[in-house]
Amino acid sequence: MSSSHGHRLITRFHLPNRRTAPQSDVTTPAALPAAADTRWSTSASVRPAEAATAGLRVLLGVVFLWAFLDKTFGLGYATHSGKGWADGGSPTEGFLSHVNVGPMASTLRGWAGAGWADWLFMLGLFGIGTALILGIGLRLAAAAGTAMMGLMWIAEWPPAKHLDSGAPSMSTNPFADYHLVYAAAIVVLATAAVGSRLGLGARWAALPTVRRNPWLL
Image 1: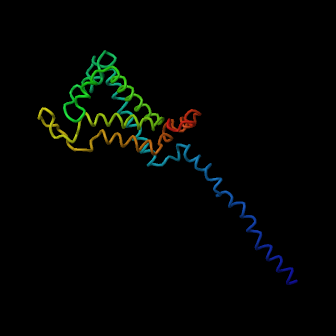
Image 2 (image 1 turned 180 degrees about the horizontal axis):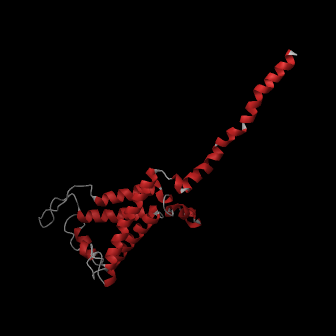
Image 3 (image 1 turned 90 degrees about the vertical axis):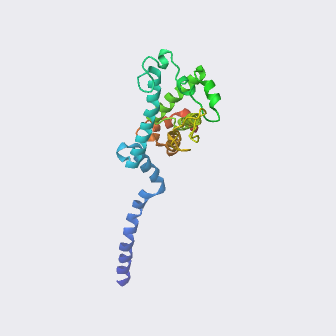
């Protein structure tokens, strides 16, 4: 009887292990991606840091898109009413024609008012602003934004304390100005791939063309 009783004890001790084994499958690596996908696709799971980063993306996009609208229609802010691009004005002439400091001053003055310069500048503002607001094409936006901000930084040339005329340049920092801050912010946003947060980034990334060409993300 002792042998039979011992057998029952062994059976009872082993039964709980068999019943709990299938439950451990819930946390297997194969199940984790599905849970992660649900977390990334539901707005309720967006964490404060992710929401703040997405807010920065949209806010920076508004900066670029507003510049495009003001320069196109002359809304009376940086561009006076009646002098917008749609009214026949040049969005680059006013800025580039007054560049008088830095190693590219003469070259940039030569670009002022050129049709190709106007189109590239305006398409850049519109494309970068739209991409940031919608959360799509952030890599292209980062490349275009960095190039644009880099040229504008060279045009203002913060390292100079005085203009070519000898007048004070009014530069407050020899290196870090808002152009570099904007460029760095766009690069960080593209690197973090925040288009999938509070935007159309997830749908954009799922398009066949974008999946075949990751540089379009």
